[in-house]
Image (cartoon, rainbow, N blue to C red; front, side, top):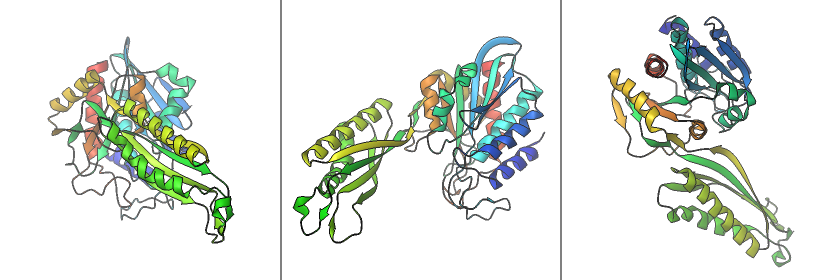
Length: 374
């Protein structure tokens, strides 16, 4: 098969986006593509709509895993591609369609020449955008059959020159989590606020105090207020409940965990002082993406062999990637591929994955396979 086949597949996936947890038809399209490639083992419904295709070598050896994401975003596409999203309010604006095409291209290479030793797992993961999919995969008992010795993934990066490999040792991308603090007091008449317990003061204090907490840590960390709500628009009523939502991020997993603990303590202290009930709920939790030195060496040697333009980044990216969770379960490596300096940014309604990157991604991953699995 040719690059034209992969390009057509990518554009078909782009036209038919499905968001986190709903990727049934996307998984079917990937499954149909792999049927012709005759992998040695197929695992379906892995962590929900996930799929894994196993290509085995003749001799025992290392098991390497390459990951792509199935899901699109709940955003309306406004670009003018001839193959733009046919589903209202949903679009592949992060390039997961391109990442899937790359792993499909790697599948073609493995089908025409099996690895010499060990096993190569091609994983298509659901729900990356919500930070849930990696956890679903790792918690699925079927994952034990394919638990890898190494895991690799890439992400396209607008704003960097097309085909440039963007690399980093150690932390590649921040860990982050969303959290909502719910405070419950007592509603009263607005003429008698002293007879109620209004959470306004507590929320005002938290909005001022919580973003300052990262100062207590040595490395980069950030607390961003994203939403606040107190009471309702009833002018005769003093509010009895309120919520505050934040996003917390850090470059170090321990720092992230410490920061969450500091927030929890501060919330409990203020709530207690103001006689409020409080509850904290966590959503969209992403682990820090930590690059293993040995996995980095393997992949970066391949990039050098291919003569790619390589940029070693000074500090990690502040956004988060669900792949971070894999780096807690085995030596892992995540890198970036430039999507062009003038490309719209990820999640922008006009973003579209550049098809020219498919071949570059396939070449890097195939190089890694040949180094690890022969």
